[in-house]
Length: 227
Image (tube, rainbow, N blue to C red):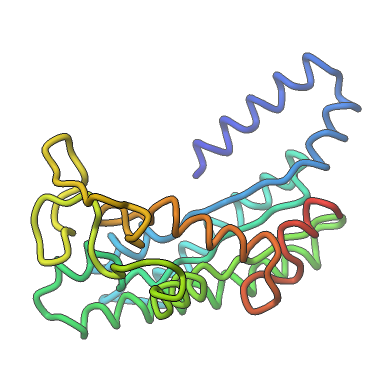
């Protein structure tokens, strides 16, 4: 994330050199910034979470606060942030844990702790950084709702990767050239061991764009873009 902010700072300088500082500031402050980060910290920080969940999550949030503040200082004002999804439901986690539901529950609890602290952080930044709005997108709730209601959302499979190699849920090896691919990916929630299909993403995006406070707060993405 630090490197990506570095790239944004460089891009900002390029924009300033092309259209001037005043026009660049107006452009950047009226632009929409979308950040999806944190899930991998939970997925692959499991050992650290066992040793000290709260301290580990606090470290992630502290780093993210610095990064978001730096974005603000580079003229970002309309910032939408995804929280961590219900990571225990992805094919990778379903297949990799021999201890079953206990390990999956640990990851989900860690995601919920991170999400709670993230929401508080975004509310604090909105209150204390003049002119900013940090929208909190509840990806955890979105993924949970899509999976729990997968048939009414048009899916036939809620726990298996469309692109699979091995594993009870196709979750042990990432999608590669020799993988087996399902005949209709639009009927699957998961494309590979980690990522949703386009069909699932579109449903989540619609909720984020026009959804109510149960999915995005304090305003939805359309309201943020038009603010």
